[in-house]
Image (cartoon, rainbow, N blue to C red; front, side, top):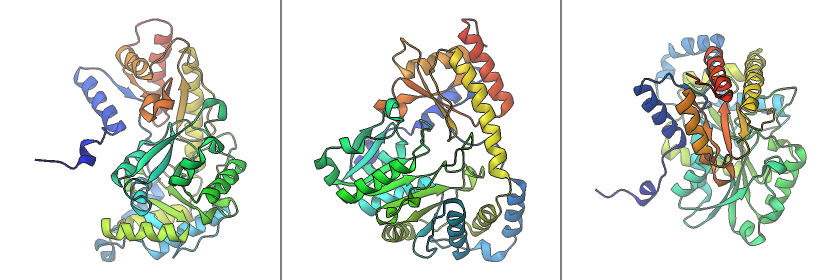
Length: 392
């Protein structure tokens, strides 16, 4: 049997490896606590589940949905963007619902990349950007992110020849894995740069509503002229703790939205309509859900940072995202070795920064999506380990 070359070249998905490591340790009898994967532990709000229960009883929702989603859902997305970001969207031309934003991110390169075309991807970054480019036959060029730049790319240092060859650049703020944020000035420079070189901006805004200390993340579409070059991916997964329901959206440039919709009609049959109706309720009536969740995450963040600093890690409190990005102590060189030592000594799983690209080496990522009792136990073990004592 001969598999396609693209599959043979496919690296194991990062979180699949983490899940395998956890299973292995648990088989050895270790009480493993994972701080590795950013999957919210807080349940979907009850009032949204009530909407879903009612919607499942409607026979109209038992049939195939449409790939471009219910018109009412597209309209709710447009209303949310206008209310939340001050961005006006045409729900029929500039909005397409997604089966989670990951699905749209994976499909967008099929709209833009022909074999041999170039995609610019920040390093460190979410692995799906690169894998999706590979599936489309494209070539990835890494754009390094640096701590001293606030983990923002130096767009003006991208060689002009590379910029002219690129079809798309992937940006993601608030950022995974670093938790970095971008201001209006950066987005304005990015839009001007993209217009200069005729490059599409694919902006991943999955953490738009996970923010702390009064910070409010913005959409790139708030910048004048951004719709000329940008498509933005967003999600209800983190905002409303709905990762399991697979609800996302792509919005922005009408040509790009149309192309992505055409790809989707040939690839999938859309989001179940009952789930879309739950999403409409979330967007139209968010209640105090987002603030309550962010308060929980910010308290976890503060407790975790205290212990991480005891371990000698260098870390600043992130203003957004579900993650803490911490620099290894002096003398440590390998994030993989450091993470392995932690799980062996404490049973606590963290994600090596090198998993997100070569520029992530020297860092680890901690997720804040572990229930409080288990997080506190993990922090207790790490604090004991920091004192040089047996941690479990």
